[in-house]
Image (cartoon, rainbow, N blue to C red; front, side, top):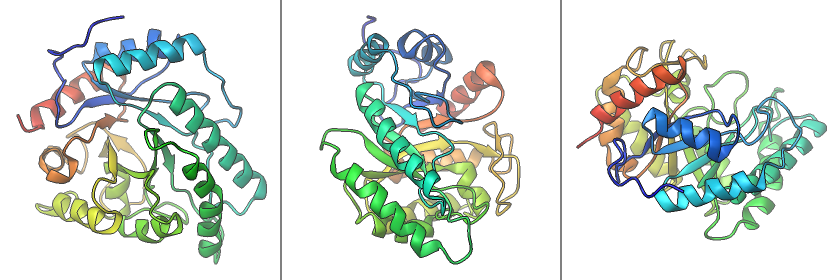
Length: 295
């Protein structure tokens, strides 16, 4: 095991920076190695097929090695739930599989020592089913949240870009969702900058980042923001299109990320890229975020 990287180029108490990376030959052999080659000090992974329901048991040796690396070097890791998860679905089969998938992935998140499980907040699909969808969210998630230990991972809710009948897109949409979950202490928020912008948040305006973050705290409470997905947008504000772009090369621009990295609400919050281009592009985007971050 390597020793703690106290002089790692992106190691920073204010905001660890990293990317969603492939697992490849294993969490420690693959994902960890990729993160370090990118110059990152945080990462997000899938622990199974992101587009399938079949649960993956993982490799216990790799789980242990990865967990020990994260603990030794103080690296916050995150797991992203499969894309198929939709706790608001009117389909009983989809709903039941979604609850089972979240439960399984919370177990995997705990096993690898990750800080949180990111779950898309979902959609109600059909007209007139919003309230029913929120009841499903409550019934499916509260028992899982109650089972989490105080020192265990958090469930990080990720609002979507507003396509379809999203249960959460803009920050204000989080109010009824969190109410349905009784503002459970194990619930946090993952703010995706492309999603928020596509849903209509004014992140491209001079005070837009500050107003969005402060409204998030007003609605969710202090300390709920657990992760930022740092993604520029190929499309204009309010497009409802989830098309990520490299940092500074989309309609948000570098100024939005500089403002977000400097705001008190993001103090200590990791930023993870989900941008296109592969490893070389991620390395450059991380270097740009590091340059934009307050020194």
